[in-house]
Image (tube, rainbow, N blue to C red; front, side, top):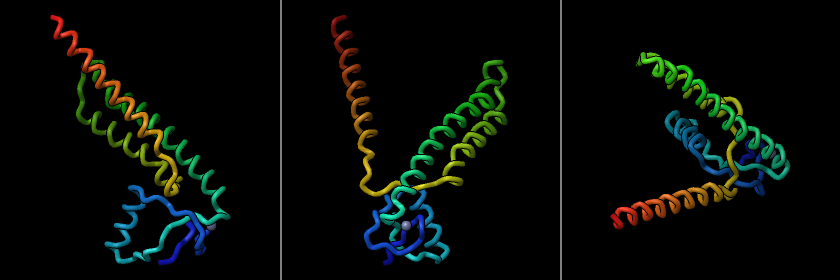
Length: 148
Ligand SMILES: [Zn+2]
């Protein structure tokens, strides 16, 4: 199994591994089913680390921008008609489709995978805090009921 740099497409024994995410798993699956799999290990070689981190940062920024934009489109196309009292299934469906297309645009235009072992830990920590907060809120409600 060759280790291939995803930026310069050269072999690199010392490159850093790319994390398997949904996009890469999907591409692997496509290649497997079309029998074009080369089974290369995807890495970023030391020479390309800087280029890659810039690309990755741009991609992450694009995702945020496009998801916000998709949300706005969804609200305008699908939800605004609701406020005027006219529910239109067609408008709702078009809103969802448009939002979905906009949301995946950055993956099609500027996709750049995460490196393996890069911290995604902060998001997990935030989730933990959120569940803790919910739990303590639930406990608070129970106490109020008990007093009654
Ligand atoms: Zn490279």
